[in-house]
Amino acid sequence: MMKGGWFKVYAIGYLLFLYAPIIILPMFAFNDATVIAFPLTGFSTRWFSAMLEQPTLSIAVKNSLFIAVTSSILATTLGIFAARASTRYRFPVKAGIMGLIMLPLVLPEIIVAVSLLVVLLGLGVSLSLWTVILGHVLICTPFCIAILSSAFQSLDQSLEEAAYDLGESAASTFRLIILPLVMPGIISSLLISFTISLDEFIIAFFLAGTEPTLPVFIFSQFRFPQAVPVIMALGTVLVVLSILLLTIAEYFRRRGIAKAGGKDTGGFL
Amino acid sequence: MSAGQRKTRWRDTEAANGLLMVSPTAIYALLMLAAPLGTILLYSFLTDGYLEIIRDFTFANYVEAWTNELYRSVMIRSLGVSMTVTLVTVLLAFPIAYFVSFHVEPSKKSLWLFLITIPFWTSYLIRVFLWKVILGYNGVVNSGLIGIGVIDQPLDFILYNVNSVVITLAHAYAPFAILPIFVALEKIDRSLLEAGQDLGESKFVTFLRVTLPLAMPGVVASVLIVFIPTIGDYVTPQLVGGPEGRMVANLIQLQYLKLDNYPLGSAIAVSAMAIVTLCSVIFVGLNRRYLKGPK
Image (cartoon, rainbow over all chains, first blue to last red; front, side, top):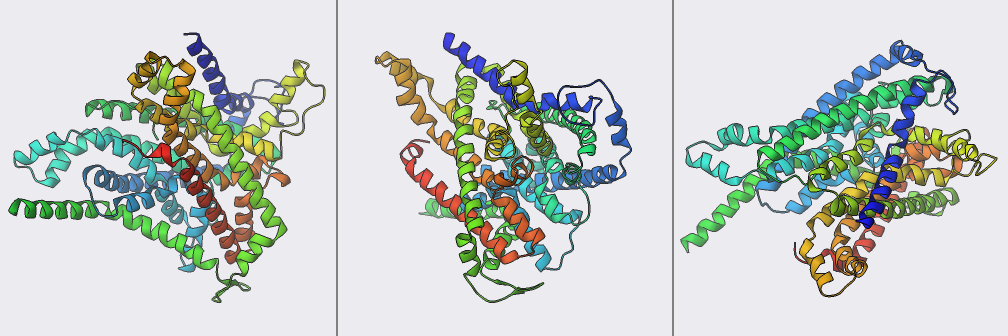
């Protein structure tokens, strides 16, 4: 018991380390000083109102939302195909194919970014929000597959066989039996890929051309010390939003596993 | 015989169905990942001309990338930073994974994992920037240490160098390291541990001889999942690294976007990936005896 006690002290210290930046962020967002340093000077919400008056910010938000919504839908669709194929079928060079699809999970994003840049410029494609989407779909798909595979894995195959025996076709079985059961997984995958895309910087930095996305805007503002408090306010809003999205995603992921009668092994990855 | 025939036909259709099902994703990955990676490999052997790429096969880019003092030192530093980050991250992560797997009630495990993963999903740029605030001259660490009287001058060796890059990256990749180890620990049959202790081993020896070897596949996975991406991190060295903390991604960005030298940029990128792959293969090879065994 004592051993567990020490572990718990360590775990709480570790969580403090993990949460340190997130705890400090709102302190500066609500601090009444232009310089980001201690000691804090006083409470103010002026950075939040200054944030709303940034014209580039609203363009960046719109661009990022467009990219994130489109990428998450495309990545989840591609994820459904791959997750279904890898959990349900055996096929030739499966490990190689799945390895290639999952590669962006470990490949540094800058490699994805430069290689796509070279090809797109070589083909004469002009950089736009769509070129960012191409890259984001690539890096989101492995996360979608990880989530969706556990959803498909916990499916009881006898349900599917029962539907075939009762005369349903493969397509109608998928629509009537499988899809409803993995729907929580799909929602969770949409939310996670949305969050990843919204936060992704390097690929957008290389492939967006002149269009600002939210992270590219944030990065550009770091160069101007007087702009940083507004970014702290923006960051606070983003953190609250992403915690909200993740909580919803986690809720659906757990419900999905419970619905299909599986055991919760925890975690998104 | 007909049963055997039916079996092969069934397997054929299963293979065909599987390939058909995976094909949209596989084709996308081929077009958007494999082909572009092949292209930078090709570019790395071409010659950079003014405003265009000359189709002359050459090893000059690799000679430049490997012999130029600046490029070589950045490459060695990146490798060193990556290895240190991996070591620190995995060593700090193991007790957490162990705690959640062995000391947390099953019903609360998901909550702990959720708490661990949340910071990972919040704006990466802002998190990195905040480490600048924490480690800076008037930052949290310095004002805290001065406040309690440990130091009277702010420490200046914790920002804008390799140390700050290591701390920030170790923070960013923490969940990546915890989850694979946790999954491996969860798979361990608890009765093996009881058996170890019933046979007279102490708790610590049981840990060394039973738990640790069985957890090694998870440790290997977390080493790879931290080591490979960190070497290509751009934001952290750019924001908290200062001039002496620059890493290979900053060099690649410089070649591509500022100097417009695609062949040299490609050669640096390919070299970095080759080194990382080699290190990973050696590491996996060294741990091979832990990785085989019953699935």
